[in-house]
Structure formats: structure tokens, C-alpha cells
Length: 190
Image 1 (tube, rainbow, N blue to C red):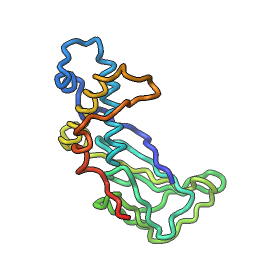
Image 2: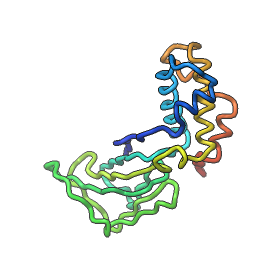
Image 3: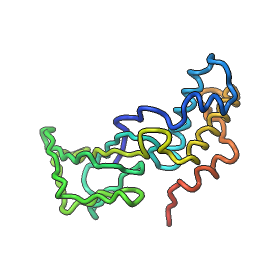
């Protein structure tokens, strides 16, 4: 089972102008660097929390259904399951009708529960689930603590950008970052 993003967000939760104001930058010479740090900070916050901050589409691929016929979808929040496709030996795909599965988008992670087993005839990655995830289309839809965490990361990485080589990045995380994202981390009970 693996999931990968098929379409990324069209914007970032924090704008270049907001970030430059946070950094107290008044010149445009490092806009490209700051924009890259914003993107990296969003990806880090998404990775650390298991959330999709802005709307994006994902695909989960499986060789077969788990025994309990429950497939968990990450990142959260899942907004919609777009399609479920089962592939045959010849590579032809057939859509699974929505009546054959139920979707629980209130849980984290969201779940797709199949009412009956699916038997893909393709040996590998024979089942694909396409879904949309994210808090919304604009930064205003993203929780403020997560946007603040992004700004703190960008400021920290901007300040310490020359400390280590590219392979050592990110060099460190700022104090307080973990507290900002803590309410959004998914906890596992052993």
C-alpha cells in the first residue's frame, strides 16, 4: 500500500507578502528563496501532522484489499473519494460502483470500507483509490497554528540557511515548532 500526491495545492497557506512581513524583509532579491522555504515548510508541516493543508488529490494503490476490507486514507482531512479502480491482467481498469463501499470521512485517518472483497486480476497495484484531501482552497481555511508553524519554520530556515550543506538540510527545527503542531499530530495507541 502506498499513497502519492497526484495534484498539489494551487497556492500556499501563507503568502510571500505575509512571510516577508514576518521576516521583516523589505527587498525582493530573495523572493525565490523565501518562496521555496514556504513550500518546504508546508510539506514539512504536512509530513509531521499527516494533514493536507490545502486541497490536493492523492492516489492510494494496493495489491489487494486488507482482510478486514478497510483501507485507511492519508493525509487528512479527506474531502471526497473520487474513484476506485480495479485493474485486470491486460491492464484494463474498471470502476467500482460507490454502492460497493462506504466512506468514513469523519475518522482520522478516513476509511473506505468495502462491502465485499475485490479481486484485482493484476498482480501488483491492482487497486487504485483516488481522493481529494485538504482543509480548503485558501490559506484562510487552514488552522492558524499550522500557518504560524510554517512561518516559524521559514524564519528559522532562512536565518540558518548557510550553516550546513544541502544534504544536511533542514539543519534543525526551531523551539516552539513542536508545540504549535502538537494538537494536530495523530497519536497512536500501542
